[in-house]
View (cartoon, rainbow, N blue to C red):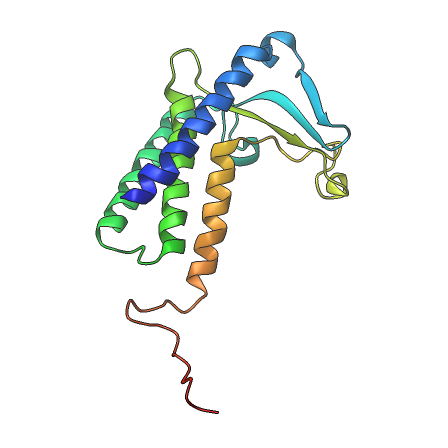
Length: 183
């Protein structure tokens, strides 16, 4: 349970505080008709305010029941993670870290969708990547904007991928001790 308190909770709070900062300091792009951009590293990294009403990379953006669908998915995923946690499906530090990151990411984006007057996820990290225009025509080289919660989910997915392809350590496994008397 310490993973949820010491990892999930601070990351969830960081996600919500950064989104609050963006909403309070950047104008609504839907009212403006364009997105305010504040360069942090010129030509590479910007802060923006983007409303994502869909899922990853804006898929299903603007569909009528998106928030209901994604809310149900979030609640189901959180329930599933808790059940797996109770069954000790995350036996080592790496898998527990992944589960805690998933919880913070899911809760962060779910909170955005249910906040009164919101109904969208706030994305604000904008990177312009070399050669990305070749992969995503019309993007201007800009990778889809994202947030702290999205980062947690992606890192968790990578950790779970690593966990799936490595041999788990047993609780009693230790490295063999070297015999100091042998020469």
